[in-house]
Length: 225
Image (cartoon, rainbow, N blue to C red; front, side, top):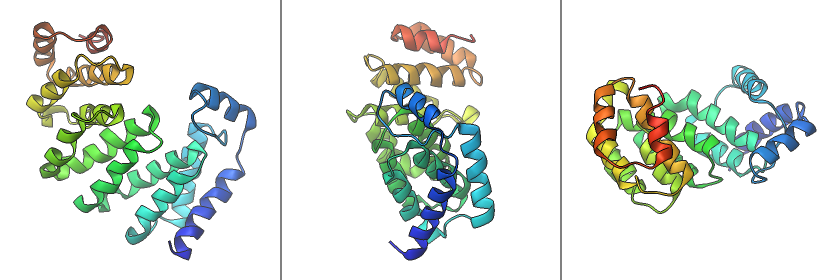
């Protein structure tokens, strides 16, 4: 860990610390079932602060990006994990396929929908669209894993693919976990089908008609059909 890495993270900590809100922190803690600590910075304010920070300080150099992200991920307050995701989003065009392993490791650390639902479709999904050869080594393994956040990530990485969706893989993943009793897996299935229906409504209607899905998944999938 270099002095530059520590300095970069400390600058962000100093900025965020000036905008703490104890009342909103308590609300956030309750909303997230007491799983995380919070500074109490509302999302629009946090995004504005991070944008300001990146404009003034810049993104971490590529060789320091991973260490910066891991340092932010290790901080107790949830806003720092969100800041890490904002930074990755800004830097993702410079990432290589060698970065996917450490990006994927974030899915199973401090896991909840608020980080996974950025990591999967917006970051890992973006990387898979550039490096499709990685999908068998990652997503195909995730859907078989017992970790529900990896299962959710496998389902959601194609969320933004539209007409580039690998329909066979999408439906195969869904059927693999269609009988799951996990809320976050059922919800992911419904969300993905609802989104894909905007591109291929008849394919989604046919799939739902010919396969048994949990009520939550089916209800979510059919919302706009």
